Length: 72
Image (cartoon, rainbow, N blue to C red; front, side):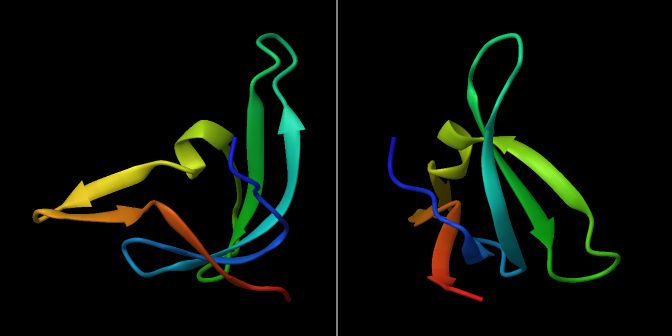
């Protein structure tokens, strides 16, 4: 798994998020990313780490789903 570190990330659609920490799913032991939206109400979310690191294709171009943009 590619390193996922705390800090700010930009989703490929443009919005920014803050990774708070990594956690393990209690049943599957899958690594999950705990993150917060840096817009709107600042909701807290979880997403599988494998999905966080995916490369997505949009309009014939490939992008990381989330790109690290720096520390807080």
